[in-house]
Image (cartoon, rainbow, N blue to C red; front, side, top):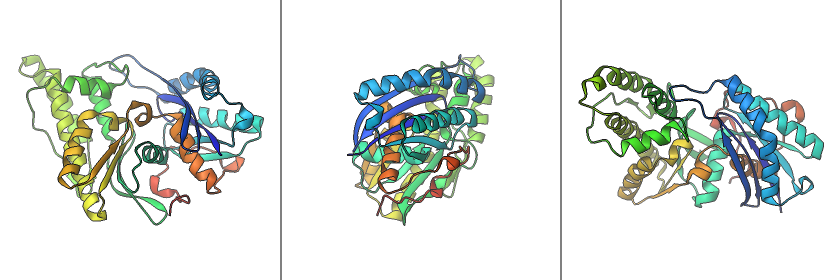
Length: 335
């Protein structure tokens, strides 16, 4: 029996999760929400996390019905992410680890998403589409690494959606991507826009520039609505993602695809990926908002795997990094 606690705060979500041998004991999370038309700055996000994390920790321990003495390891997000919020959570993790006398495990945020997705869905060896506000990657496991087969060459798909939400002054509560998804359901007119697939990679900044300019110039004329623009943007960027994911599946001979990351909650993306998977006689796996969106328990799960395989971090090695690639990590816990 191994119990791991995880601290996550790489972006605007701050969370603490506790897991015991694959069973989720606690998953407590708060979101830093800014006014419509704005994003979240690292300094302000760090202040938010610092003000919330101790209360979240108390709630997680209460929800899990355990005492710190029962915890075997303290896991935290080392990166990638925003520097200031990452630092806040690393300091908290270091502090409680020393107070409780527990070893530290430094977790790659991306691998946290993958391992949580594998646990919750039961996917064995899927091609993974990892889509969030900060990352867009197509990944498959091979020879002790999560290999990146394709990725964005500029901004992440979630960042593209978030930026467009700011142009339209769409609410950030609960998230701009969720609100774009709801608006897109009402869209009836499709607007052609750049389709930027470059081999196995994708690019979203040109699409974002196009749709932002289109919104400012054409919406005042009354021919297109916010819903039409959100619908068109979603259809285009999701088609790009399905294309490169299918190509990776063909290359790997995979019959499983797993969607992880905050954008992975989008039901239209899941629907489009599901159609592709069905055509290939493959299985689609995805999770809901509890586990798709950044959370502490995904860090606890990845840390649990690392701890059980003998991977722990010395205190001097528990710094954080804004750049930490998925394929930098030796996956010691998988065959």
